[in-house]
Length: 97
Length: 238
Image (cartoon, rainbow over all chains, first blue to last red; front, side):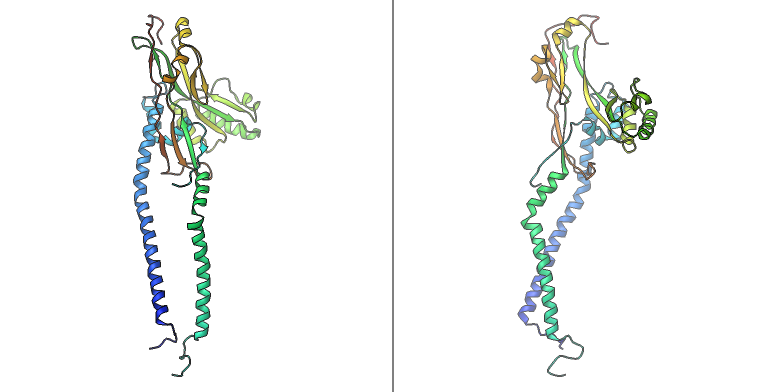
């Protein structure tokens, strides 16, 4: 059966090989993205825990800082507490991560 | 079927041109992708990192100075200060003032009239915010612009003039308490501590991007220093 195409066999093989390589690359890239997405929630949880720990430590330096009202602030607004205690942030130049 | 093209099939010449055109477009796209993702990768990554990452340093609490029995002679407490860049527009000042004064305990010297007289200037509305004030301010920032809460340390000492003279004075330099006279200066290296450092990625409005915060350096409060004196009764801290 002819479809009206006259593609040499070697070109056909080359095309199939190229398609297989492309699909392989896409699968590798997808695997990396999937791994990153799976790890992200755990990283965020870990980051939140560290944020709260540091926030609690900073608020304990306030007069009466061990009271519930101060420590509750560390639970509800840890990022905000850290930013309030930090000096002016500066840009960090990083060539690669 | 004839020697030429079968009925309904694409002519070989036209097909060849189509394939060639597709190949050229694909080559252009792939070349651009290689340029962006391989050749210029480092440059774009560096530019993105430069714009997105911010570093913050948290000054540590200064160590205490104690007498030989371990009773505090000098100690630091963290406090939170509220500053506001008063808007130029009078209506905005009135609106924001009403919002703030309802939810936050402000220093008694400030009133609407005194704030209106300081338009365009940065004023200190409170130097010792409470936990309730901070909780209110954490959400108020969305409604009142140019509010800034920052933290500083207050160095307290026992009331005795003789002991105070011995202890010396401190001064804040870039948010860090530095001993300038007396025992505060002599033992400054031990008392000062090491700032904690973190870095975080921010978006275009300066807000933290969730999950990117990292502590890069642990904060160490200053060491306590014992002086070879004994605090007399009646001169202790309240």
